[in-house]
Length: 58
Ligand SMILES: Cc1cc2nc3c(=O)[nH]c(=O)nc-3n(C[C@H](O)[C@H](O)[C@H](O)COP(=O)(O)OP(=O)(O)OC[C@H]3O[C@@H](n4cnc5c(N)ncnc54)[C@H](O)[C@@H]3O)c2cc1C
Image (tube, rainbow, N blue to C red; front, side, top):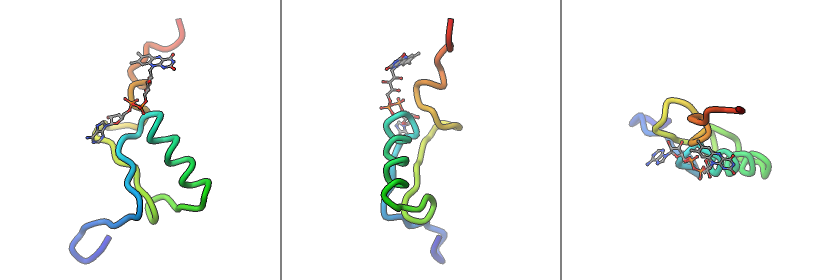
């Protein structure tokens, strides 16, 4: 975070569903540090995307 209160990151992943979490995994895999080099943003209160609304196994 800089003096204006604005966070800076090299990569911003929008959405913490399957696609966003997979992107974050691979960024981490190639050496990007979470919260320093990249952030994952989601307007939902929790990660998981559509799957968090699944009814689960029958
Ligand atoms: C009930 C249900 C059951 C399913 N079951 C299966 C299954 O059995 N097998 C299968 O292969 N697929 C299944 N699917 C489909 C699978 O869930 C989707 O294909 C998958 O979730 C898509 O992942 P995604 O990351 O692209 O999108 P999403 O999972 O939709 O994630 C997108 C994320 O981005 C966030 N977002 C969107 N716009 C913004 C924005 N402007 N700013 C910030 N955040 C934002 C959302 O809040 C969300 O968290 C199912 C889907 C549902 C709804």
